[in-house]
Image 1 (tube, rainbow, N blue to C red):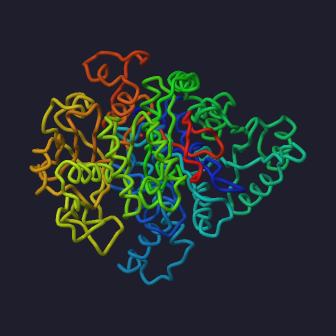
Image 2: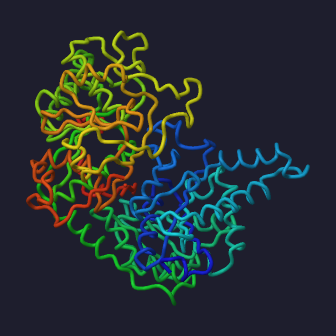
Image 3: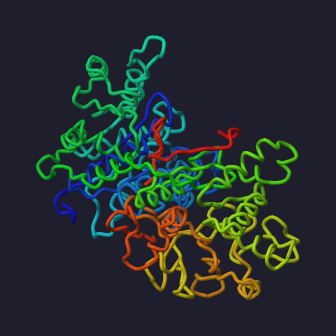
Length: 604
């Protein structure tokens, strides 16, 4: 089975959503994958996004959350980050299907004359293209083993009834007949609200949602109902009667203390038995083994000693904008047995202009920064908040506060060093000041200034350590090189590197040419590291990203223990796996994995 020999034909699990968006289809799909994997099956995932964009690369984080980057350079929906982290797999750009990709593929075939003069229509041409795409991508190995997976979990984005998802619902209705009974299981995630006035769980929204689903040619095998509390038995009976779903196949996804409880919640309600029954897999499945998930979920609940990390960014109004960062911090803090507390600081609130216009906001932002144990400056685009990020980097450098800068965060650390130490007051990036006389950060030669989509330096690239006696190399296990994911158009100016290094900063990681700076460190600082790549995309529960582990360890005084080979920090798990090469979820109203967040009260 694990080698692809137990399941003769690909099995498909489709997860749809009803009533409202944001119910947590992504985390439900991921948790179903975890449960099936625990039963001994190999699992792959596909996310369908009905928007017209070709990919997520040109969308604002405020529109759709973070853009998740894959090894192959695919810029995809953040739910693929959920799948990768929950299932410990590596997906491809084709695992994210969009309306834009489908229509582009069909129109390309039409221009080539592949349809032999026929009228190209939504049915059958678009719907056939969707089905063929699913079947093709489901066969791509994603877990490092040869041969296809046993089960493909498909998440249909949006809500049943949306106009833009109609071609996909039609295609999936046809697909369920195409693959045949016993090879297709539909799980419908819906909302069972509780009206505060009467305190009763209301089933009517779910009834209407299932009716709409049936009218589109899809019949649910399982209902996964979001509610604040477990469904009452009479509510289950009512749903079963009106939705034509057996009562034992109705599962409650109620609020839990942290997101790692979700696979356990599904297991405890026998969701795996309902899925295995629908897919005719009972004979070859084992009892789900979720010991590691159970211990991790329970450990997260027991953590009491806090570690405060300030995230200084420009998209702090929506935490999904930094979802992978949050999860990477969480993985690191749990492995060090600390309770993560995130202080969200809008970068522009630290700037002098805010001090004049809104002094209370300015004071609150600086109070949060000064009260933190560590500072994280993430990536971003555009000049808003850049000066605030530079001020945060300066504060961390001068006050010896642990600091991690990612992508733009690394670049602003270099700019701040050039201004403060080299005395180059106009040092800047050409992204923000094209005419600066001291360009510390420049546009990459291979980039495009006219086309934004897919033109950055994207995907997995190799970084070679220039010196081994540095914190980053030690955190990565003294490897000679590492492979991490990138997403950037600008880079540190190689012509300024020698001046910067002469002043005391060290570029400890470079690309294969030696001309592109990948990691920067301050050797005489407790922890001051910048990375051009995005290490958060490869962090996993139980396998925290090396640089995030270093930041959290430095913030709670455990870095020296971590850096000395095989020494275990106090209170740490017996073994911390370093993963240089992600567990992210979004789930409405559920406390975010034991992450406690603060902000300055204005940007809640």
